[in-house]
Length: 370
Length: 250
Image (cartoon, rainbow over all chains, first blue to last red; front, side):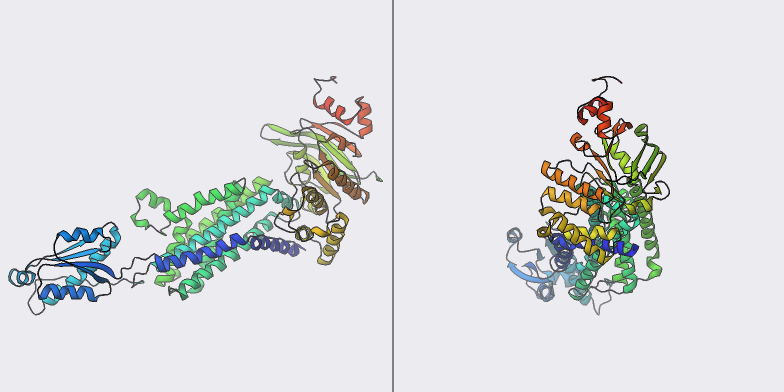
């Protein structure tokens, strides 16, 4: 008899959710759109950058270097400049991101004076891109310099060999997938649960439930399970999409990953219940989830802005954001293939938070009703 | 209404304090089985607080109470199975259909599937709501919602049904139909405990209690009360009790 009561309650909850088509569309559409956006549009990779060359040397060295730069897939020759005056015009046209200037008598200077000058000018209206472009160009130049020195006895040289581990191609989508998953889970679990509970409070149906033979834990569980199922399936969709379309790897144990997902969902759900016990109505529940949950999660979790670069006070605050621990775990497991021995600390922090939220929520919930 | 004389609600010295404010101040009364019991009082007199204690939503500060044969303090779970409750804001889900609401409430009161189906059909035909069956609650007129809410609150055939100002904001015709439903239930032996601030409605009750500032100041049949206060209508009785300084002081 008890089970029948509970299943009736569950059925009702799913009806609420599926009847609200618009919300469903947003919930399933948003992660897909975000992943596609991050995968295709937002990227830090540099490809086919337009460069202009002002070659005042016209000798073997300048031609050789130009050829090398252009034969890489990163650069594309847009224009050959004739004079220094044209540099500014080239940049102002907006098409050219970098200008390479070879000095007069470059080859001669190198062979006689052992020093040649090449100027790299880049459009720093977008500093990040400018930095990357310059770094690529210098790498090519450095290569060339080493080849020039072959056979001669060079002064001591420190060679750096750089490898970008776990994401050799520096794909932005690798970084964003765990973040998008986290935000969506937060949204579905915490925000949707709190709104749905606050709605029952607002319309007076919660009172009817509390008067019924349903126990209060059954009411909470009945509210929580549908959203748990929902956010779990959305997570699977997000993961599948990023795996099959963008080849984001899952190098660690998939079950460990799903286990952590479950833990995070539970943390978020308890937070949602806590919010709804504070909020008097749906509007307040939504505002609290937005301001108190979504914004700090997006800004302070390391999803977009690296935590290490934040001012110290913000770094300290970021510790109380559950998503911070979860995103770092996701990255560890998915990209680095880390196992339990690495993530157990973060897991403990998250589990502790879940327990605290759950305790506070159930206490507040009881206080409100009794 | 054949009253057997058996008490179904017994309240003794019930008190509810919120901090230093005493919302319900030492009330005692009995309700007989099958009775339509009116619970009157001005806004803020403590009616809703009292009703919320009796249905187990809020716990009393002190006192004793027995509802439907169970102790309020130790057997609240048993009480819940035997009572129905309808609040001022009727408690139907706007985004569910008529039949889904009936099924849901029947379900949480533990009705078996076949019984629930039977009851649902019975209820819909009694209310004449066949054409609304699959309509969402938000699309049906207020009067219908209110009547449906009452029927749904009694779907598990409770021993007592508590109605907290069920007729506020309802047109006179619907109110009449509403009272027909209430009488129907009482006829079948359900005890009705109703709060209202419509004084004309109190005339429909078997017995009426009037609460002023958290205390029960009068309790009797409408006829006796009118006699006692030498009044022509319940309205007058109420005014004398609620504003004793403006009329004759006791």
